[in-house]
Length: 217
Image 1: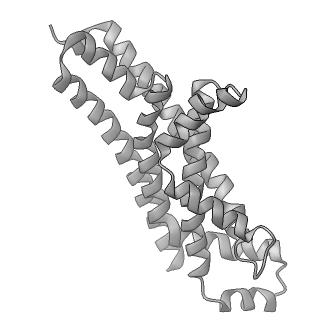
Image 2 (image 1 turned 135 degrees about the vertical axis):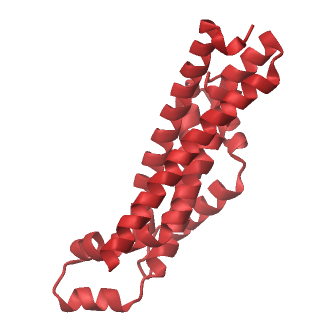
């Protein structure tokens, strides 16, 4: 019997897909929101928290995401701090993703010609308006390929959540394989799910970059 026609296994896969999408969307959105003010702050000549942000970026990008998840879910209870599986996964993935997005946006800001700031000041724009109308749109345009690539990596990285007791797509496939021994069929279906999600992100990137190119003409 084709296991994909079994309602029980279908439900497991779609429940896992829903959890994967939930984790991915939250991580992508929140990490971008958190990275922006950090990247803007790093544009200051000297800031009190420069070294702190640099240290965070180094640690978050150097540390394996799996180690972060294990530390949050299995390590913190030794300190009397208990987190549920989903918050543990979200915090760990957001912690790592924010550092990457921070560096991508920082690079985007630093790639903007200095004359842009001088022109904004000459027009009488205040700092907030300068960043909102001039700097941020250009930084996102320059960093877009890296930001979208990181979003795809976070979708694939959400599979690590299965190791902290979250029934996402990879965990569901593991259970089905252990019960049916139909590894190839199950993994093919799961691969298609991940492929469709990645394709949707790439399509959104294409739309975004096309619109940005049209505005520059």
